[in-house]
Length: 140
Length: 140
DNA sequence: CGGAATGGTTTAGAAACTAAAGTATGGGTA
DNA sequence: TACCCATACTTTAGTTTCTAAACCATTCCG
Image 1 (spheres, chains in turn yellow, cyan, purple, green):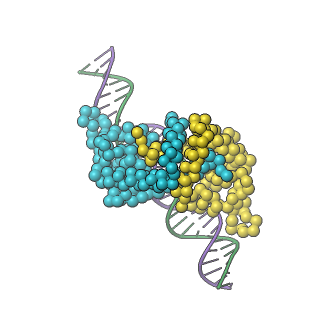
Image 2 (cartoon, each protein chain N blue to C red):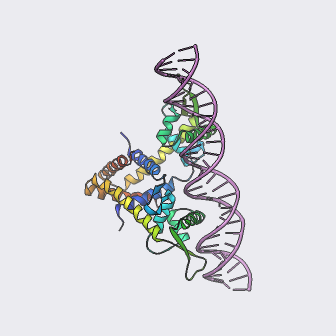
Image 3 (cartoon, chains in turn orange, yellow, green, brown):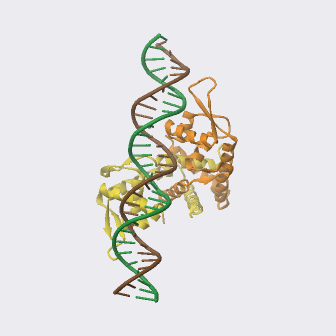
């Protein structure tokens, strides 16, 4: 029998292993984990500042610059200077980027649906409550 | 309001961010994530084959060779040739390695304890059941 | 106006891998 | 016994992802 913290550790290991490999996202082509991750963080609604993106991803601004440059070369995102602050750069998804976004979201949704199929609705409710607590503990 | 899969995604992001930074493990010194991870996989009881370690960590044998070489240089593990098969290499923790192992285990235990404090015992039970299901879904 | 703060980019380098080739040993089999 | 293939590990070159630190440009403010 495993302890709870071992169970958690095992799931983390499995998730990390899963998140390590590149995947194909329809016409958007093959994307590395951090590429699709960045697309996910940019989101479909409007643009986001480079620095906001960095803090959302939990990486440095330098890392974001490199990532966005690569995604721009793949025509998945566009850079536009901020209308009033000319230092700032807004990043947003192109149509092709949105395709990748939606396919990725659909993948996550399907995966979670698989989990839902194996559990009662009230178990899912408790699980999600625990996820919130966990997230709170990890916040900072 | 967030969906369940978004909650899960957020926790995964937080955990990844947490697991990315090196930490100090008492007299064992500062260890990178993959170093302490490897020590954890070797375990305190006896030795383990390089190839078994690779499959336990989910990486190639070449990666394990590099990791173990580094840990050996830090005097945290020892290599010994297998008694009957001289191709095989058994890896095991030194006393210093066991110190790191135990401190790491204690950290995990304490973290999980924090989570337990915020939830009912029956909620924890459901959570752990969900972790098992999740782990099963991720197996392959 | 002048200096500090903010927003982004660049660069060199570290960490954590992989893939593929190389070395050595073991186990059949003919 | 000689041969060959599989197993166990190591080595090497190269990739991905990221950081830290220096840099440039713009904006804010006393």
